[in-house]
View 1 (cartoon, rainbow, N blue to C red):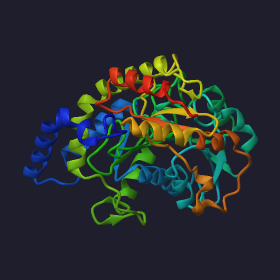
View 2 (cartoon, rainbow, N blue to C red):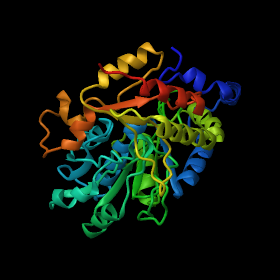
View 3 (tube, one colour):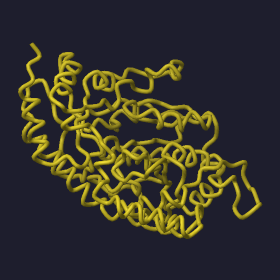
View 4 (spheres, rainbow, N blue to C red):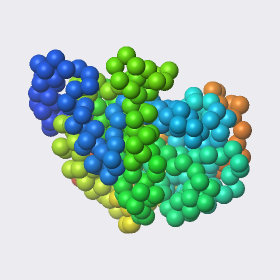
Length: 377
């Protein structure tokens, strides 16, 4: 395929030697857990998110699960409490809620950001709602004055699902006074899944926060519930990050900002050159710094499959993020929810175009021209 949707071998080819050297260094050290690479990674990610604490964990889902479990242990949440979650998200956001005996409350989304619509929050509030989980989907921050007002007036926890937008900046400051994702709310979960802008060579994740108690509780829960060796204060889990994955992530951090800058250029090229009347490109917000984990267009009038098949024939790979929203999944067929018209419309229209390295601006222009030549007849 001329332009595969994502080829991880090609994506990291430019620094493959650095990755191999870092892996060898960990092997030679004999430290495979709780070592210096993990400690330094946590320090660097905390700085990136402008928070005091980063606790590395096993994956992004576990990051969210551990945050919610920690708040339960701290007495700030209890089973049966409700957490507002955007309806347009990967299912992990909702799984973390229900796994802790909490109740997901789905909120519809804005068509321009494709993120949670904060104007709908007030209508979802009842005495059992104790938190809201904005998801910075596709690399676009989800935070605005209305969201912050609802959080503050109703004394809610704000837990960011930052799996797809690490280092993005919102157009307003969050509760901590910073605009960077991960530092906007009370805590955030990060994913280092290999496909992410900052991806490991396997699973990985992190919890970031300014809350000292939350950080120490998450760290204990992730290590069998122990606050020190053989002293278990919680019935915990094994959700630690391997030292070798921390080393891989630290190599990638050296290239991270350059790759995000390249994604912005590719996104701009797509926006400038895709002109097909059936295809709507995502909004580039001047006031935000988006990181474009995915570049998601919308295809109208039921032509999505036809466009994807056409692009496949032209050697251009695509994907859908996500064709089936959580409330349509069999495991959540019992989940009560109101009308979700924007989420359901998007689920039938969205297509993700290639944006990760080695896609260049010239590649984006060529892909755009191919899209413009699409004839659904």
